[in-house]
Length: 219
Length: 219
Image (tube, rainbow over all chains, first blue to last red; front, side, top):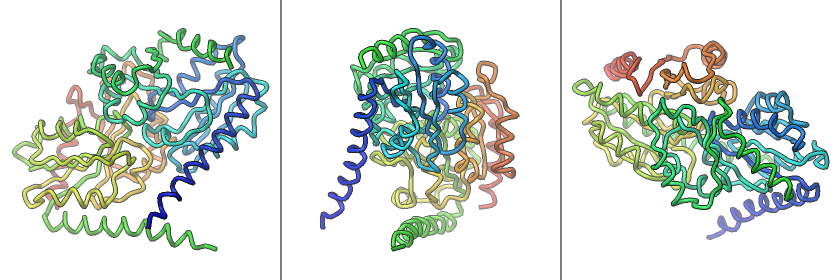
């Protein structure tokens, strides 16, 4: 009668176990790894694109980009200077999982890199439920999405280690109450490391880049 | 050996069958119904909020709002003049399905309304896979999300009857190539009815409102 519950647990554990395998592999290579989550169009790929030139000569970066279709994102990462860029097309799936990352890692010689950036599928819900094995999960929020997002997507906002608030250059043109937004963060995830920046103007990117470099030094 | 395929088909059919039941109920009441899809923060709720006052005295509107958490959206719909507003909290689920809509319809006397607006969960992927039984599916895209979205989310862009391009007031402040965006639409869904508008300034809302009124007259 309660047969379904253990089955669900086993599936979750299979993903988590493979995430541990991925982590061991990443750790063995001495690489710092992040999993970037966001709504469609919040600026995950733009963030990677703007970050890579600032890391030139400091960190060697590999990028793994997840999408339902196209290789637009990995093409942009490669053009921006990623030492390697692997595209995962999920074929309709709404998130990356540890199996997909495992397959992508097979295509990389991790020992050649200091930082692995995994860009998840654009989706503020489903990716939060699947561990990949990366060290830190980074959420990219963006000003035009609105200030109520922490309240409406608590699962994702609660589970991340760092929060990038992107598109701050649009603050004068939209109705975004920063106090209300941050109040939601405070309730859900008071210790999250936060960066406010604009990929378009470059404002605020330095602190984010230093955070990556500091973490990569420790890996 | 191929046991899994019929099982998956049966699950899909159960949703589709209940969607047909929902449709029959909506049709019996002579109501026109739409299912609004979008990324988080593209402006589904703002569109409803700005549309309702313009429909005052012309259509009686009921709103059903789907979200993972909170009643923010149905509160906004009620405040904007919806004759009835029902909130569905999916408890983490990334989409509405026909079962959820069926439950919400139980709470409405549809004969009191001309238009039923169903606002789906903010997600550009999963909701496209679940028919609800509504007459038309409307996708709200927004300028700051970027011009590559049709290419990256083809399943959703392909399956909709109408496309609202929101936040056109932000065009001067972001890099959005309208030609490239519309080229993607042309390939995926050449016959889609398109509205360009700004919920913030009100520009373009009239054509959208007339489309609703025309369709409601026919229902």
